[in-house]
Amino acid sequence: MCGRFVSKTDAAMERAFNVTRGNWRPDWASFNVAPSQDVPIVRQSENGREGVMMRWGLVPEWAKGEPTRYSTINARVETIETAATYRGPWRRGQRCVIPALGFYEWRMVAGGKQPYFIRVAGGEPFALAGLWESSGKADGTALESCTIITVPANPMVAQIHDKGRMPAMLDMDACERWLTGTPADAREALATYPADGMDAWPVSTRVNSPRNDGPELLERVA
Image (cartoon, rainbow, N blue to C red):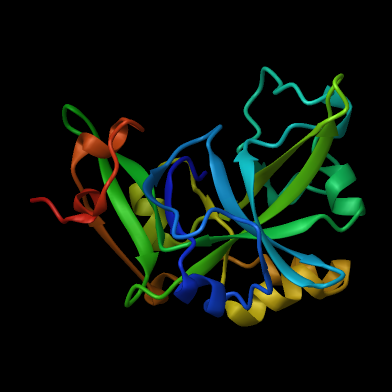
């Protein structure tokens, strides 16, 4: 799964993702993004790639803008075409990417869980594949929200996260296929990222609390 990640919305990230309409918070950054928070996403619009902020945790169209009781921060790739919450956005082509610098997973160790920071080798930005939805509220406004798609974990992530899942990570070529390609192209982009193209190291348990934020969370611990 993917329950925490690192992202930002500076000019370098806009250039990396070719954002032409930046409606997200300028120079926003978080080193400990948590569910239900607003996160930056990129989607394809008639005028190019649009950067906006959305709630992380998809609220279905039929939910009238109210979050459901079950978790919708992640959508399994195996069921995005059939699950009641995700089949509508998938059918309508409401695909998005979430710019990221890395994500966290927790490994069971003696005495508890050890968090790890995981990224593309070298620290280059990448995309997390997602779906977005708009759900109308009773007052006539709409809540826009998103989910991150998960795929089977590669061997490196599987050693850390015992659930055998990881987010669908996209390089820039795969990002283009996901955002603008046919449904078949988009499904092909949702491949498990290779382990030899990734780095991981243990970090402080301070990341366990979403109240903690800052670049020091990425520092390696013994």
